[in-house]
Length: 522
Image (cartoon, rainbow, N blue to C red):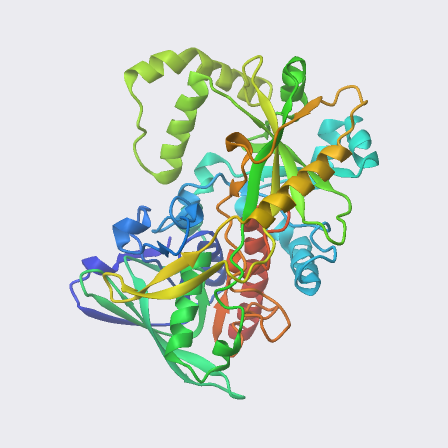
């Protein structure tokens, strides 16, 4: 098991550690990387600014400010502590694929990303406990059956997503050692990375000599390591790199013109409703189902994207308003975040019968119970096109630890809404209309309150990966201009592409760990 240490609870005001690798941020990428490195024999320390049980940014004094509209991914979409945002995320594992490698924005980077995902998907899924391997395409085709051919003929490729079991959504479980396993990383909570001391590297680069992490009570932890890995989430990792750049104006890192800019996300909204007579058939064909404890669902990708088009995907959502579903959702969310469920006796009584149906369908039919007549909608998610003005910067305001607060300028522009509407029309135009068994869709009027695109809590772009001089991270995951500083974050993706970015980030982290292991072990 990992050694768990609360920096604020130590008697000593100052502590020093020396390790091969220091990982900053104990969310999905940080936990995955730290445990992988430790299991390969690399001495590793893992830090997080939050406590052992995850809390909002306000509880640890890490709150962003906003130049324009509030960006929900920086408020509701962030969590600090061991487990990070995995303490509240949906647990969706979805790979970026050949659709993303088509020549839209940053084709070289996307080709590299897609190749890395293809190479490491099986290893990452095995590490997360999924026994069947990367069957995202084959599962969808086999489950939909003959209907898949109608979609393919119209230029839509059925694909599936995979949800981690509830007990595994919070990746803190990876820090628990199994009998006979090697020791995990040393894990510090309530340890905010505050001060980075740089030293000259080779060939004009710089290197991190040491990092000081601080607790809110003033306790300090000095870390010396051969390599440092930023995995603190997109916004916080960007903030840290901006701080390092500010303190080392002569390093090439400041030449990374894109650092902090091009903040993007998925833009999401329902674009059509399933005709009422087809609701139950849609639930039967496209409703979520289970493979053991793993839940599966379906989505639809375009086989080809026009050169001036935007990457996108669509999926059905179901308005499951049953009291039993609400009850089960609260109980399972409490298990994931390691808290007591907020359930009253009245809610239990009201939802008991439906909860029994959920259990019945889950274990007898391997399906998620959806009450008869449940409304269904086709949801569209598109990647937000790169916009220099959407950015993260350092503000003059300071937080409780004296660090400059992250200021975020992000908005959904009229151009974004126009691209969303254009993509919706293109995708609905590809939906088969004469094929028996596929639901009839009633297009929505876009731009209304119920169909206005919103973000999906998938921040990307601010630490873009690439081979050009404006990129912040090279294709190997190293911060440009830095000898021993690496990044594992959704911020490295140039745009959101066609998938929730977490699984792809884990595949990139897997590749990065192999690189570090080759340097440190052997």
